[in-house]
Length: 483
Image (cartoon, rainbow, N blue to C red; front, side, top):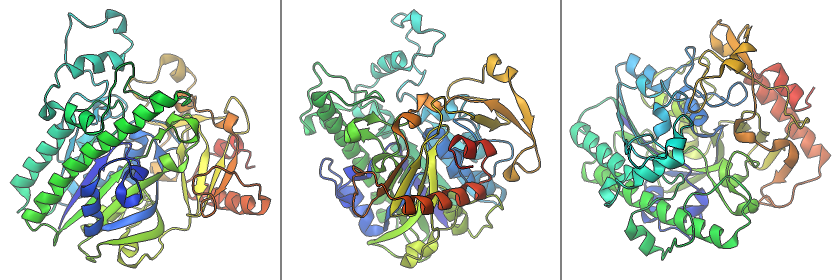
């Protein structure tokens, strides 16, 4: 058996034609839907980038205990489990957060890895003469982006084409070998929306007087919002083109009989919906939280069908391990999706999702309940970790001066963890938005919050049950006013 995961970052399902989109051109995603099972109720777990990737390793929620950070010493890592059982794992990615302090040790769990440079603010090209010296010491990622772009003139110079070229080389070398897992990740279509000229022309995009990097703020510029939507559609179209190269290779080398293919993302992105650009600060509406997912599973051979059962990111590592007939770790909360693929047998009745310090969200597949913190200062809130690193830096001395040792949790394998006072990641405004309940059957665009105390009580009961199953810290219940 072999398995391939092709992962995009910030891929909006509503941009894909097979999910009803009409802005991007996605014939290869349509091909993929015909060759696999398309999931209609796939939800994120922990947000944003690295918390989602911790879930892809461990198969359990991250956001109730910790914000952005590395894998913990007590974590069960899916690629490491593969290695320990004689199954080769390889990571190819241009997602530069893997190689920062807050990502640090994810790649090293694989047997081997390739780092493609230059996305967003990757500190890559040392163009000292033109570098803004005021940016030194503050890691101005927009300054590095400005410099990196000067070294991407032809399409093949861009990180995504390089990433997929490396993936195809891996397949050329190893398609006839057995017992391996390839995780092929591209940062696109994550912002900034920097594109080869041919895609700008394809969508008739003129950037004069406009920028290509959405802020995570209110979408109060109608013209700029229209530009962002066209740029995102163009970049999704480029993603589709490169996905097609993997499908072509699998066709040409008859890989479908013994190779699982998973195509997924970590989350979506708001492009003016709900009057916002971006993610993290605003609630996790479905444009962000409900994600595209495709699985070809040769164990059942089902293709060209859709599935309505609720699934989550935490289920993907369990599905990969089960594909190789490996036992799941005791602490893994995700489950093998084979029953859903085969005949839409439900594997979970509810799911949590959110961001550390933001709303705690719960869904049963039809209703989405967003529970806001009851205090404007979002307290009490702590990080629990043995690896105190943020997005691009270690925890500060000031933060560590308040650190206390905590006895640990069920999943920390009888080891204590640091308890460190925390602020919400990227200043989430959960308290100001308040608690909301939506019925997706009657309000799929989440425009009309329900006032239904009986249904809210049911969703609170489900949320508390799932939080207890995750061994959530006591203060998370207090923060949300759940007693």
